[in-house]
Amino acid sequence: ASYPFRWRRVLLKVSGEALSGDGTQNIDPKITMSIAREVAAITRLGVEVAIVVGGGNFFRGAHWVGASGLDRASADQIGMMATVMNAIFLQASMESLGVPTRVQTAFRIHEVAEPYIRRRAIRHLEKGRVVIFGAGTGNPFFTTDTAAALRAAEIGAEVVLKATNVDGVYDSDPKKNKDATLLEHVSYREVAIKGLSVMDITAITLCQENCIPGIASHLFSLFRMNLTLKIVTLPELEAL
Ligand code: UDP
Image (cartoon, rainbow, N blue to C red; front, side, top):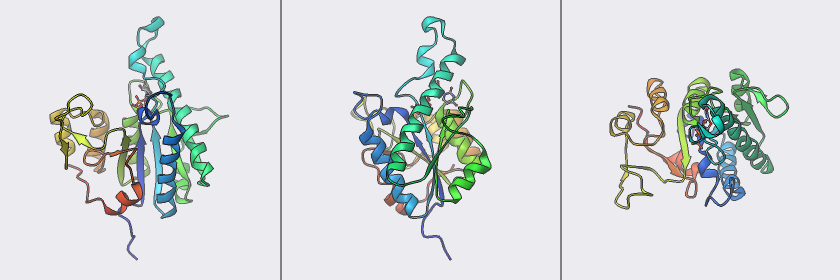
């Protein structure tokens, strides 16, 4: 029997900044609930969803290097812990809607979450549980975009979707340039050549090398996302 949806297993990257909503607080529960509702809807359709969450709403390592003598590796460890806070919050939102959710972290925080174990993560997905990956890749000098590309490749996700505050890929930053135009289709190659700040280059390269379509062509705004619809109706994404 043919599968009714374009994708069976998706990796959703939720940036930390998007979680802060209008930015008056680190996390806006309205945003986490709207993400949870969307994810719950597609999970109930039978699509497996794994989430990599960022931490920029709390802490971005690079910004703090030098403050009080903080070195990059230590600053990034704080950043990775920030992603765990978001993961726990999102998990609560998901479970309040009755969607079983597991958090797996790239470094161990035994009392709080499971450690990342690839096969176990896949098993959770197969059982219909949402898996939230916290702590990025577990390594300083990386980003959660790269963690998203890495986990997508590891669990065999068919697409990486990125939820941000912007509704698509623009040729320049729409917040700074009112003439910025929305690009309908963008290949990974174009993202790299034009220096579009969609995702960092490490993440783009990983997606490209593993033929994972996604992010580059279709970002979607958290405020306007309708994952359910997009999952079913999006035209084929480019993986060039
Ligand atoms: N981080 C890291 N290694 C990783 C992922 C994240 O060191 O594999 C740290 C880094 O300091 C980063 C912070 O965690 O600034 C928050 O992640 P990111 O900036 O990717 O979050 P987002 O931009 O999605 O909110």
